[in-house]
Length: 192
Image 1 (cartoon, one colour):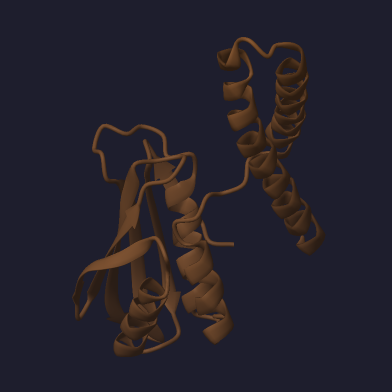
Image 2: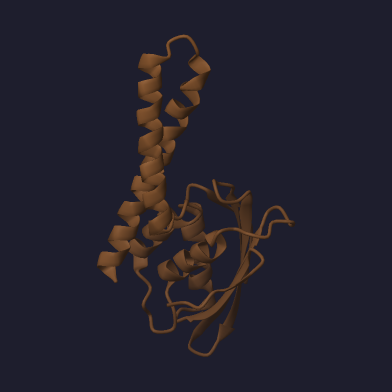
C-alpha cells in the first residue's frame, strides 16, 4: 500500500511508475478528464494540477502531480492541499484521492490496473469517503429514529409543522449515507 504523509490537511506521496514520462503524464490526464468532480487546472510536460470541488468533508482541494524521469520509469510526487488555506482537517480526502490516482496509474512493479483502474480512480477521486463503521452504525440508528419520531409527530401533532418537518428532511439523508458507508466498509472488509 502506498505511504501517504498527511499533516494539517496537506498530503504528500512519492512513488515510481514503470512507464516513460510522456505515457505517465497521459495516464494522469486521462484519469483527471474522466472524473466528475476533478478538473485539470494546468498541464505541462512534467506537471499536472487538478482542482477538486468541495463536498461534505472539505471546501475542495488542489492536487499537484510532479513527474520526473528516473531509471526504470517516472518518479511521481503527488501533493494535495485544501482550497481554503486555513483548513486544518480534510478527513482523509486528500490522502484517499492520492491513493486512487496511484491505484490507477500503478507503480514500479507494473501493478497499474490499466483501463479498469483508470475508470475506478475516475469514480473515486473527489467522492465522499465512507464513515467509520461505529459512526455509520450510530448514524443509521439515529436516522431511523429521526424518521420514526417525525412520522409519529406528523400523525399526533398536526398543528405545528415545524416540529416534525426538519426531522423528516434530515432523517433520510443521515440514514441513506450511513447505509452506503456500511456497504462500502463491508465490501472493503471482504476484499482484505
